[in-house]
Length: 235
Image (cartoon, rainbow, N blue to C red; front, side):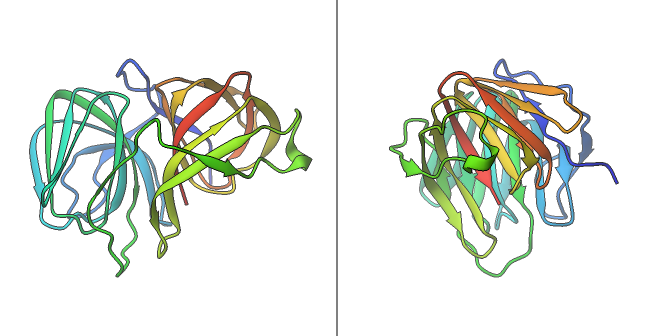
């Protein structure tokens, strides 16, 4: 079995990353043809969607975060409406009655929890870049290779049943050594740049506007020399 590794999904300029993708869907009720970078039996999936037109789902089957990289994507659900442009993101709750309108040439990165669970949190949740944040824990001292950073975060969407948390995080610069990633995590950089180092020593640089997915247990070191602010999806 191949060791899990961090994968870039899409760039700030709206282009697809050079990651190997597999065309497919996430299930029988999935409204999209996707390019899948990660999908395992634990229910987490990540990749990109290229789409245009109108899509309608009576009961959305997943809890899914989308990050728009090109075009405009409009989400509508029972009086709610979110119009997402490049760099903007939102959560579609499991069980949402949803209409999606994608302009021609639209491209978005996604991270979906596809588990079948009874508890649903239907509705749309915006993930504003300038969300007010509160102090949060810094990385453990034993893995830091720099002074401890100051970190802040705010969960905007929490699904307790699946242990899914989605929100905004920021940090002052820091460096830490490699360790297996403790969670599945999608990151979309709102500000700054970070270099992630894989187990083989190869570097993956993530710049402002890029979206990356780091699977559970993927060896990953972190080096940032500037302030970083990101959207996160963790489980």
